[in-house]
Length: 108
Image 1 (cartoon, rainbow, N blue to C red):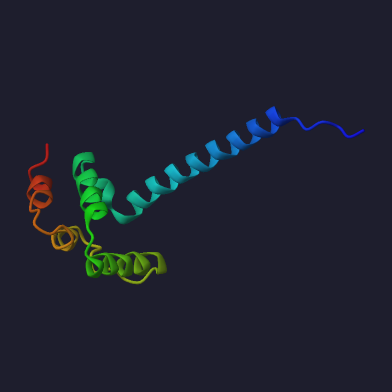
Image 2 (image 1 turned 60 degrees about the vertical axis):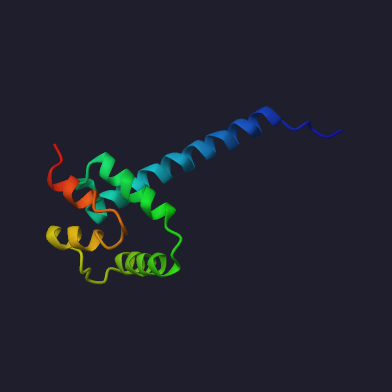
C-alpha cells in the first residue's frame, strides 16, 4: 500500500514559496526605484507617474519607454542620468500632465 500524500504539508510549502517570491519581487522593485533615481521623488509623484504609464495606450510612447528601460539594464549611458535632465526627460513621458515637474520643485 502506498503512503498517503500530505496535502497540508504540500500546500504550506507552496504558500511559503509564493510568499518568498512576493517578498523578492517587492525587494527588486525597491532596488529598481533606487537604481533609477526615482527614490528622490515623493510617493505621490512616483505613484502619479506610474499611473500615467499604466494608463498610456500610445504604442510609440510605450515602445520608447521600453527602449530606455532596455538601455538602462544593458548599462548604456543614459541621457537622463543627471537630475536636471531627469526632470526634463520625465515631462514628455507624461502627456498633458505638467503636474509632476512643478510638484517636484515645490514638494514639501
